[in-house]
Image (tube, rainbow, N blue to C red; front, side, top):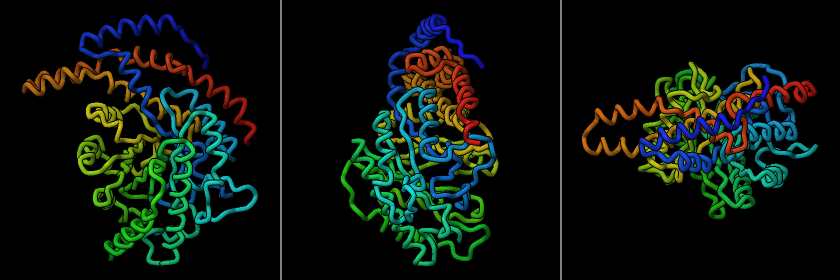
Length: 425
């Protein structure tokens, strides 16, 4: 597919669309500027199918699975960083990059996960600084022999629990060092896979152990302003279909009682359940939220995010509440069946488009109608907003951000696929 950009056509369409939004009291330029300042964290594990740099051939355990065998998976840090840089160049807005501890660079000497230190991520920090990208972090409670039982921090085996506690503490220290180096908090998200394939007799015991483990994990005081801790729930996983220790209700209670950030993944709830309404409910009780943008499809939670109604509702709710100062947004999915860079770009651009649409909503008029009790008018304005010329604003936004307009980005991915990926086979 060839790149084709008619800048004049983009500008003409934008001028007309801008006027249509202005009639409804929306400042299109201000909306684009606001969206352009919202950080979005892309996830390293889309680039290599959650394999990491520990010598494994692929993801094992943890109730998760990367399916597909599309050629060209990144095999080392250099290839992963190169792929990420290409993805960055095709996505507008402020980018962050989220790492897992299993992406440590330890040279020729393997280092146990509970012995990892900030120095093992120095190359990542240098790369991020050079490119003006901030990093986020995640401890890796899966793809490890001590996770084979299906339990980590909630394990009945104290030796297993202690190992994962040391790992979690090491990960927090690494995240804090990253935050100190980049001058803004590194979001450190704790997710564990613990659960049972079939019906357990004791549901409370593992949860009591998990509370104790989490309290110990977060007990170490780290320098203020360097780390932002979050805890993430899940409905079920492969091998934990009947029971997950860290359910939504568990972590909701934990986050509220401990005054910490709650992570909600769009794919970690019942198939017909969305998280948009949960934002206002939770922000009344926790200091902040981490939102993982994903797409649940039947049994799997980690499909490439699309410009779907669920994502649009989520972004509208964030915009209506002006919640961006208390909410971190990150992508979280892994698809090995399609070009991995394209998967990054499709999801990130879908999120950016949904954020822009939300910022362009004529919310002042909608709220005025609601406050006056004219709910028919409120509903009508919401409906009319759906057919406003968003595409013209989206093209202009991409043009101003210096990234490809429309589907032109596919040509750059095609060149990468023909020139770079064959060398990895």
